Length: 509
Image (cartoon, rainbow, N blue to C red; front, side, top):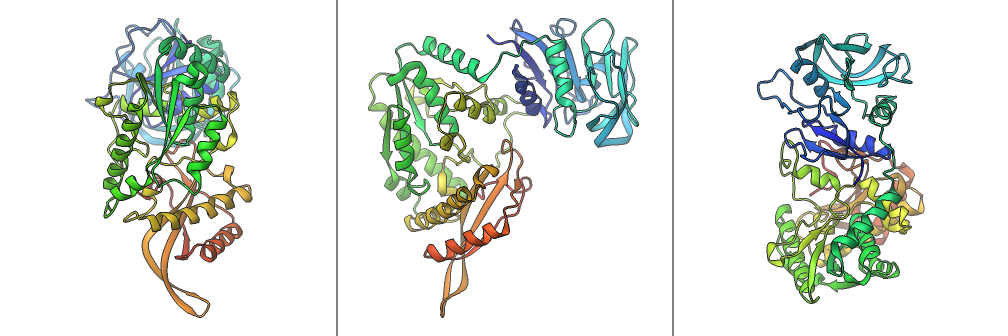
């Protein structure tokens, strides 16, 4: 078991970011809803209370039961967490006279405080709150202030309980990592031994014990998560891992052959299944995005189920589920409103009656890549841009036909290869091409054309939750546009998408 920092979530948009910053200190942490505190706290070294969209003055504000935490573990309240500690112990929290959002500077710092050790006078912090702690309880002492917020941080007498009004987890707080290090390492005394190497070692040992000689089936997608999960399982159970890689006819150009070959080079026991005709036939006449997703998802389940039943005595289904998926499913607010079905096909139906093993379900996306590098997996798999489970099916707006897939595959290939050739691929988090249900007038030679419009999109992000459009060089865009129009029959216009998420999404469907 790992030493753990427990993070109690009150619904803040920054909660996952707190976890990522703690993980960067090589310390394991888990996020739990404030009202679902684990019973077993034997591995917990400290607790962090997150921020919240609620005000502590709201009638229905979240109230955690800290009976088994307060005075038993070091405790750090962030924003709402700090206000809750103050108000629930007799302090006074009122609406701010001046709502403080954005950058501020620490004017006063108590350098005797372990939490503030090494912090610089005038250090920049990020505020995001509409309430202010006006008066502290008697045994609470101010450890830092800004010009407009007197109680920017406090400590409780005779216990390792702290509160801060700012957010140390965001990049705008210039010394936030130092503050979190002070709490996690100096105050909680975590040993910082949660590393990629240790994760691989303990996970492989755990998988060996859990799975024994059982057979496991895994659906590979060619993406980072399923590939890293496959290698971890392969290290644990070898040939008892049966991988299935389905060609749905909606992959990138030559991807089925290239990825299948690379998996076999990695020593995986993998079977390639060409089901492209089945998928494309199922998509005939289907134009609505959610309907397309359902056809693709259901067809995948049917194909995967058939192939899995050809393997005798399979006991387990392996999935590349990662930690953000787990957090989302048990969040304070419950699963988010459906903007669209998840890009990746979810769990298989009950009739498969398989137990599920998810070796990556404690990791964030960037950590999955680190684990892959530790296992010396090839960079062309680990650095691959995210690619949705429904593939090009949701990048072809309108009906998906074999001809339209072929056009988009060629466009996509020119765009992606261009990014690689110009050393821009790793500067971008995700890139894609979209075939629009629009024809435009053009002129080629002396002839008038009326052909397809394609959109190119490239974004920068860390986790896909938010994204900004990538400012690719004009020279590059001009070169790629020219190649696409000259080389792809059926396309006479290329546009570049400059929308950010939010309000747009990364994919068009």
